[in-house]
Length: 303
Image (cartoon, rainbow, N blue to C red):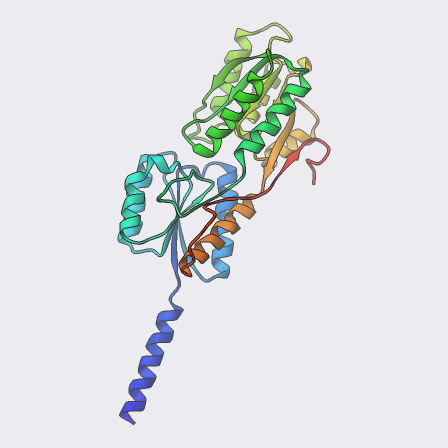
């Protein structure tokens, strides 16, 4: 009887241990961005299906703080860490996780040897599509204002590709290349910066287009153009993300004409699935996983 009890106790211990939920930390400085919110929510939903415990940590624009938060999660012995930040800026934290054997997955982050995989949209393709849209709409000639954000790799590559497209048109001039303050999401500072550009270029036709690397600056520029009473000049605005506010503006048929819809839910879900593969011991061959995107114009903005 005592042997039977021992075996039953051992079996119960094994079952209890197997039933323990994996713990995953999601760390980002950019939770104020709608896109980030969407894929974090999708990640949480997929994680919930798997019974994981998810700890979402927002450093509210403080990139350096991500390092200490990663270190905190290593100390807490989580099973995996997901980051939404430039890996090159948090290398010390990634090294700590690597030494502890904790896999790190990028969710719309950059690529790095210490990141097992990065799940994202193809920023090269998205930026090329919107920059070509702008070039075609203005007939290959005119002054363009660009809103970029080089500190974040997925957005930095968009600016590079737009630069390349506009540089291929001898009659297109990049009037200004702005990096807005994104601490509040980016709309307010982008509006203020655009207001200053409009004031410095008061002649109708002085600005042909605004190309934005994501929707918040595009929306801020739209607000500035509307407030200045210059909507009738035909200034073409494009963004990337196609968040709800952008879709509404595009559907209205005004200056904001196009954006690219990222599949935020797809990114979050694919990131969770990738974490699951790593926790199962799989070695990933493809370390960059692209989720498809769709160009959004007035024709499909309401879909």
